[in-house]
Length: 153
Image (cartoon, rainbow, N blue to C red; front, side):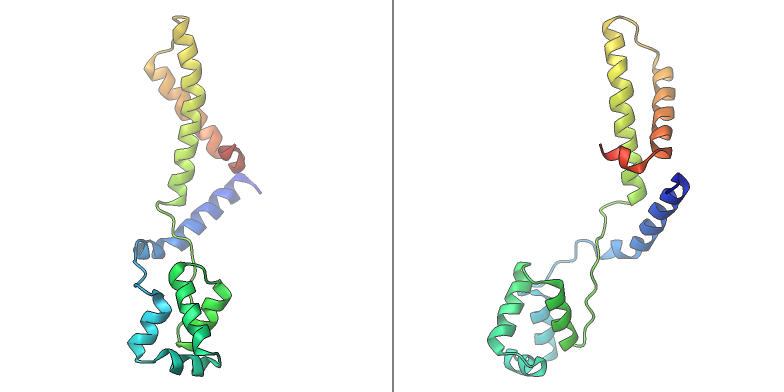
């Protein structure tokens, strides 16, 4: 894939995730969402289990598995449908994906350029700060325009 397409894909995925940043940090209710929605609707475990065609004990175990984070997505989707809910699944980055990539390129450039500068300073040949900044900017740009997977080696 060309570098322009990589950047386009990065920006498109980043933009698609933007609306979900507002849900970051939302706390799961004690007992999980399945139980919270069921109880908000005023349904007992037995009533909801009957609607789903499963045993009340099975529903109770499923609700507990969801609260403990052990439920499968397929099972959660099926139980959500029984509550007339839609399961929404996604990953919400803590910061923009573009920022993550740019920060990684900066870290790599600094490690490379400043490592050489340190060696040169031991030999009393350290370049000026302005020259180092120019080299950092160039190397960062090279990394960002290169193979994206090289940023993570």
